[in-house]
Length: 166
Image 1: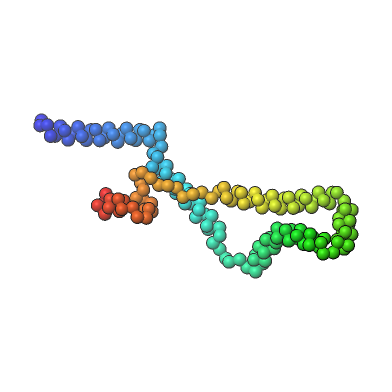
Image 2: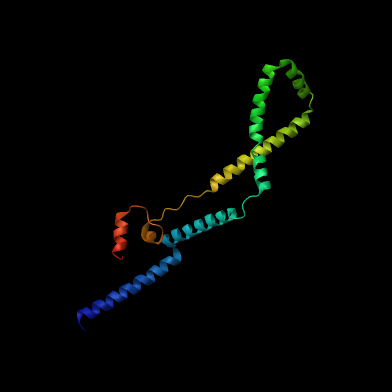
């Protein structure tokens, strides 16, 4: 037997052995490129699902009204407090009996007011913190499978590689 057929046979054997070793290694360790592809697909599905929640019928007049009412408490509290200072300076004689009236409000009623205001603003703050934390950045796709996703703008080397048909 000549050298060339033996070399070709050895090359095929080495290729088969390499494929078998790769398959066996994937049993014990996940393919990193496949993991990136799956993570990208999972994030894309989550973003698409979130976007689908907001695709729907436009808000009616009642929804817009309730959204407007929900935006009122903070400005009303802020401007109301400033208004009390202005009122105290403009009409101190009229301001004093009203503040004396607040002094006779029972303590449990103050606790109830504090709980309502605290829960309102606490829930609002918690909502904003949760939504800010769940916003995931787009994954950076690197390595061997970058051609399967959107190409970065202006990458001349990648464009040349794609034109060559690789």
